[in-house]
Length: 244
Image (spheres, rainbow, N blue to C red):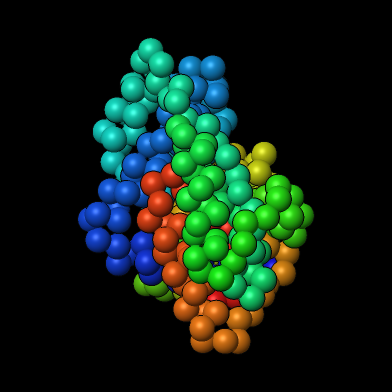
């Protein structure tokens, strides 16, 4: 399976300033609240699979347990999370790069306008639902950092497969474990029981193929598009097939 350019994302996470970290926690907090709402108000991850998935993501992002607990208490309160809805947008970035944007918003008109503006401003265009998602696969993705070199690649691969993973990939100091979305929580828990920790753990849209950008102008526009999406409060995740 081709690489997912995760090392770039991990480096950004490691070097993030406090403001970026706080913004990431805010986005995860929204996901926690909505997961409780859509799970019928259940705050026990053992009985709410989506909540379990988001908690795994929160822990991988080093979100403090107290923060997670406060989010769950807020979600359990009257009306917690009622205002938010999840909307996914699809389109093309510079050079025809396929882009999927997952948003969580309390104002769909504002968010739709922002998405169209972002795509238009940086050389892309917003498309119809389904225009690019057919070329992505939904997978559970667990990323393990081996920068210190303490882990043996073959051992991690065998452990991942024993835990129920579908695929394993080594890219330098980064190991990526892929799972069926329905098996994500079980695989993550099983690997955590083997004392593995993750720098990223979530359900992702993984591209089936990748698009190269040859023009420096297109590369600069694509980077700006991703940056403005990341800074948009309504945006939870951005998936793309740019081969960085």
